[in-house]
Image (cartoon, rainbow, N blue to C red):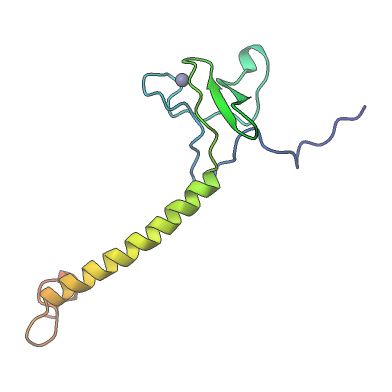
Length: 122
Ligand SMILES: [Zn+2]
């Protein structure tokens, strides 16, 4: 029987997204702490440091072979989207604060006298 191409099959763990990969052991005392699971695994020396196991219906988790922790698999894309959402909120707060600081340091001519220093005319 011919083996199907694995190109369109589901990845073993959620793929990295925007430099984010959170699927690793979360036990700070473990040597695998912060080291992501591999997309492939094999036998013997090629075995990944984690197994992907089910912790319930549609609830896959990693099992750390070193410490026995079961960190849940998380969507890196979902985390990136949440970071984007919170980042947009924080940027709007920062621009409000910057506006307030600009007003505080506005001189009698309406020009900024202290903030931002680079834009003060000489
Ligand atoms: Zn571990």
